[in-house]
Each structure stands twice: as C-alpha cells, then as structure tokens.
Length: 150
Image (cartoon, rainbow, N blue to C red; front, side, top):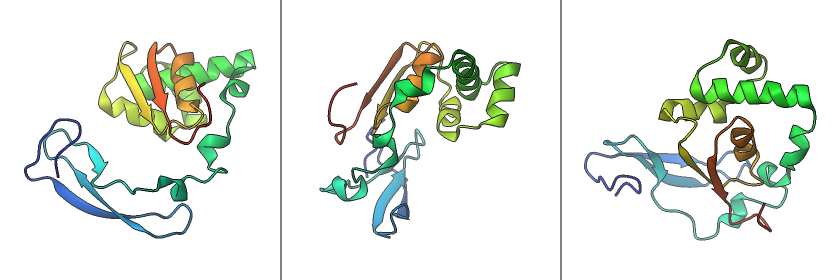
C-alpha cells in the first residue's frame, strides 16, 4: 500500500469499509498513510457507475440556483469562511445554524484563501461554488460522471 499523496509505504493501517448509502454492502479496502494521514482507497473498483447512479445527489444539484438571494448568499459566504478558515463571529453563528461538515473538514488541512483545492468527485460542483463564493480563487473539480464541464 503506497500512499498516492506522499509515496510512503511503511506501517500504513488497513481498513475494510462497507458501502452503505445504497445498501449494496460491498466492502472496499482502504488504508491510512502513517506519514501524512491521508485515508484512501487501496483498489478502486473497475466499474464505479454502480455506486454513482444518475440520481446520485451530487449530480442532481444546480449550484447557481443556490446563490441567487443576496442575504442568503452573504450568510453562505460567511459560513463557508468560518467553516474552512475558523474565523468570523457572524460566520460562526451561520455555521452553527446550518453546519456543513464537508466544508469544515478543510479546516483540518489548514488551507488558506490562496490554497489550491482539487475536489475529486465534485459532482455538479456545489462545494467548489461555496468556496469560490467565499473568496477562494484556486478551486477545481473533476467528476467522471458529470455530462459536461461547468
């Protein structure tokens, strides 16, 4: 098990993880790198379409619709900045009323507003839109199951 992030291969911890979202209960081998801490799948299934059907939630959203109302847009901007950068009292208030654990997980990576962020499996890009709305400039996403570029 060689880490795809840092190339480390010693003392990595193996896990078996079961798919539970669609009730297929297939198991997948994962490991956590003992050097950089990245949790990653050991072997990716050859056919991922089984786990990402057309009605999959991240492929069904239309992100621009989430940013049409000015006050709500401001609240989302402040919430996102708090979630990722851990700063801002008003952002904290909005985050506590509407938490987003996916955005919050970026705070553990200690990213800054100038960090380059790649969202692999981005779906329609709602997380990227949130980050861009909050002022992050270097955000990109890719998803093999999205029909066209956004």
